[in-house]
Image (cartoon, rainbow, N blue to C red; front, side, top):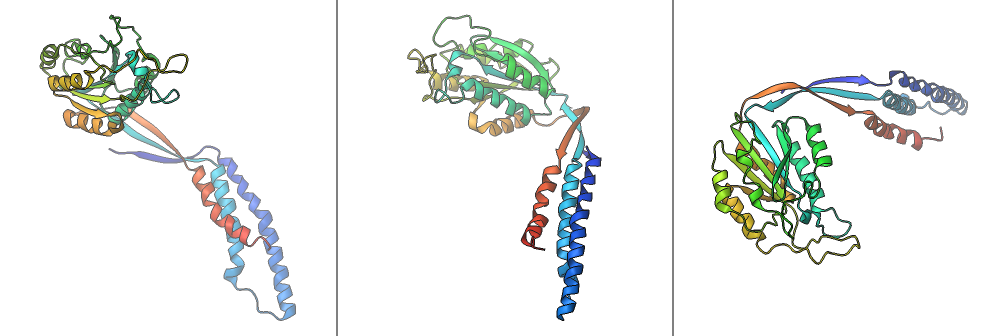
Length: 325
């Protein structure tokens, strides 16, 4: 993939600050002249040329590097924006109330961490169109597969919220893997797409579900590869307005068994929230390789000014060590 790079200066006239070097250089020249006259009067040997040039070169280095930084140099890059034509993915986020649980009152909640996981999944599959969905006891598509990272990020940040929409059931545990069952036949993926991945980001706190129904649903072709990213632990609590753990919240005892049944029914893989990279690798392996097309270019920008400021520290150190000139 060819990447074009170009060096530009945002404020080129600011480089005139380098003219400030004239003053200290003039002082150095005058000092060197007086020093030479004094040495001749005292009969001392003249200072070597190398020693005499160290300080002027250091002053020029400081001023030059600072001037270069003041001109605000940047490197602009342009690279092709490629996308797979034969692959799509969906990230389905659990928005049940249990996703409010956290390790402490001020620690990030499961839903906050789930959103961060979704963004990492998007970044790891930047060349694959990805959509966003939510679920409790029913699924809801929010964004169909797109190559727009901005649309994905905005949807996750602004449209994903606890129990919006609310679940149909009124119970302590409303999450159920039955909600995932309808996805293969509900038009979430473009019919012509051969390679499909469904990420399920959840705390997996599901009661029993229709295992056979989910198995039959995910047996349809084209196959949908399932990757579960589990967030949360049994040590987390849902905190009420008073800042105390809600006594009504407790993980269902069937959580681990339900997750294992779901993975077996869908032939899915499971990863912890600390191993999102593993989930991305698994998805990459499932999607394989395929034809890609260019949808334009992606622009990048790298500011170089801080590096030149840091580089100026070295010659400045030389000047400060010999500040008694």
